[in-house]
Image 1 (cartoon, rainbow, N blue to C red):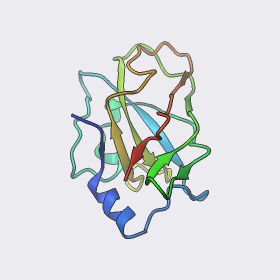
Image 2 (cartoon, rainbow, N blue to C red):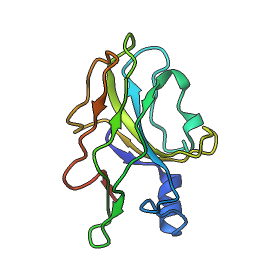
Image 3 (cartoon, one colour):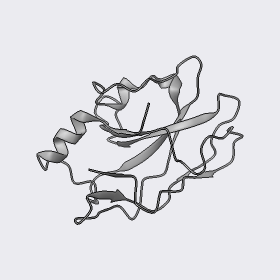
Length: 142
């Protein structure tokens, strides 16, 4: 699977219903485990964090800071987020998703699925912090 924007969220962008650079939105990166029980398979039909099995969710990052949308290129960027104390003992972390965190999985909108080109991923969690390095061009381009 290649990196992908979730289509239902993309439609919300096209309607100007979501402004990812807004300070009122909490955006996080969620680390996802590798293969095995609870594994997540991307689907264009998925819309909310509740569509991602709890067993596939390893740990969420701190809220993204420095969020910006480049109005020339359409790129979404942020500072490099940190995921603190990533619990060990499970599968390797091999991919991530970006989502809007409302505090409730059933309303936390999925934004972007990423499984390639993540500098610090894959890794085997061991309880330490992990800093996710955002590409120089940002997370994605709409």
